[in-house]
Length: 219
View 1: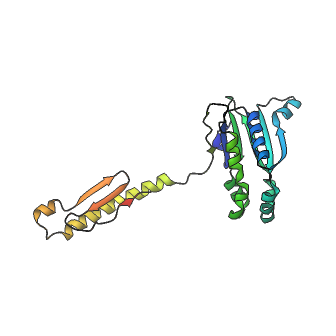
View 2: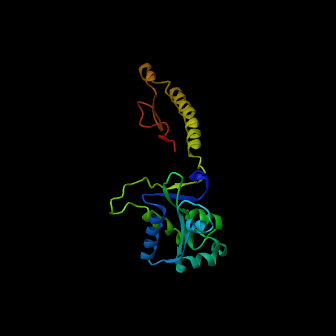
View 3: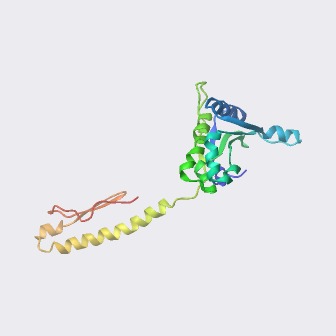
């Protein structure tokens, strides 16, 4: 089986109950919110009718024409992605999952105007509610969302900022020493103190009311 993060834009939620009960939960929540259930497809049953074996897997197709119609008017190709759908399934270890396409990914893939992406964003809250621990006392099974998405490059940018900040601090300290040539020897020995915390660089010139450079925050 491919890793959960192998398919970009798909969110997988771990469920504390089996795949079919998970979809039962989702269907009940969808109907309670006044949405329409257009179809429920039991892939395992269909596979069995063809003489094939498939772990528990079923899909729920649902939505609201009042929300989906404006999206398809703006972007007709969204008819390929609507109505909304969620897939409940079990992996080889017997763990149950509820999967759906991230609304932001759908919007990006079909070039949906940002103002209309909210019309399909409700699937996130519905699916999260379906895998939440209810009052029956079911144990929490780590139903954390797993989503495949490209790296935003934050660690590399932080490293680059830090590597540029250190030489800058050293240069500023050297300039401070040169500017304070008229100070007495005792002052020169403590002319500059440099404080380095895990993510900040600060140069302070004693005997003055100014600081050479505000703290440099490495993002």
